Length: 364
Image (cartoon, rainbow, N blue to C red):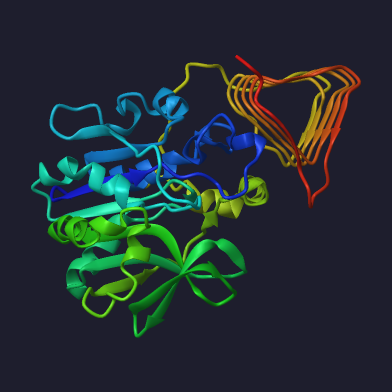
């Protein structure tokens, strides 16, 4: 896909704040032990042959840079094209959650002007799915649309997901929040590059809005069409959806769909040994990562890299992130233990399935 470039916007925050996003943006949240959310957006782009990708950074970008580096693990450390780190605006909108903030796009106009690409594929990093974007781009070209948005029929109510009003496959309006059966926006779209540059001029006075909010009233003259995706999708906007999206991967059918051999999800490589299950350990329906050492009991849980669960410790229905130690006699249940924490011996960290307990990231 030589005439297409990619853009991933990471300069947005979750509407519902939590300890998980106090020290990191949504894009760099750990996922399934060894991945970060941004890995899916990056991998979807590079798997269809895109070799020029820009990433719009938030103010707290350190963890993203630490993870992506120069883009080597995604084959984006190259002389022609590659991974471009783009600045995001310090002050965007009065409400959090705008994912395609016009101010961020206009501020990085040079990235688009210096390219000779025909089109741009834009994405965020808060949706988890694995898709062949070649099919989306081919459908975009065949339809003759100005913009093709990736959509899916909503299976439940979600106040944080954007909904489109659609008639015969063409977008007529946009609103915040979806109900069952609505057309939900997967925060990914294809747009003709010159049209995007023209929009920077059209909507310059309203640069504090999201691109699709600014387009309200213009869907008659701009041909925006939908491309429906039938695969697994997990929108992640708060701690409940984050926890559920991780736990979904304990279902082997979902794991197989998200990580097919022909469209791998790439991530930062780590030179660590495989997980070791010591004599006397008990592990059921769980995912362990490289470097883990398990002496105790783990069930229905996900462990990040280099986690130690000592003998007599119990982890159940929880996410324990990289570098944590669960001491002997400790019990972790219905919880998210952020990176680098030590759960002292005999301590109990217990939430409920409806209200998961979160411990903040340990100070480095």
